[in-house]
Length: 164
Image (tube, rainbow, N blue to C red; front, side, top):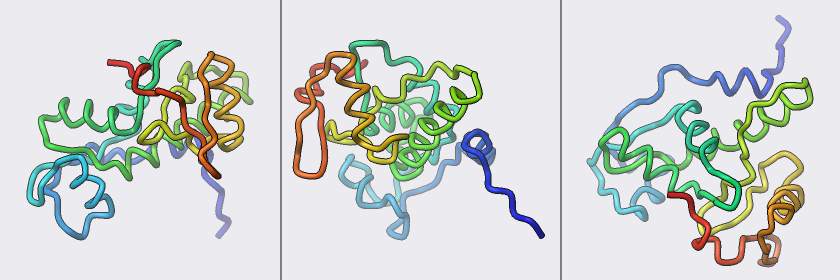
């Protein structure tokens, strides 16, 4: 049997079994992250699909930013649950970014300014196409000041630019 590697577009089509609402248990991969966000064990959380994340990312205008934490909060509110799995969300954010670049290579525009989506605490995403250096360049092009934090980068005063 010949295995065909999935394209980013195929991965973006994602898992149609999501969104899925579950009760938070200790064995969840995102258990500690959800606890940090204030979700208690046994409370309802959502595992989201890429479409919902992409909708939020598309809505971030020039001059504004969003973090994975804000995306998770918006999705949790939408589904009337206490939290959103940040692991699933983070994976889909990277898939969306790579799918946007893959589509651009094929002459299509998905119109998702993925570079305006940061990791928690304003850090740049090393899983974006071109890594953190390209992410840095795209943000600097829009006028953001990027701080070098050892091997990582973050946007200076990112909280001042968060999209509602």
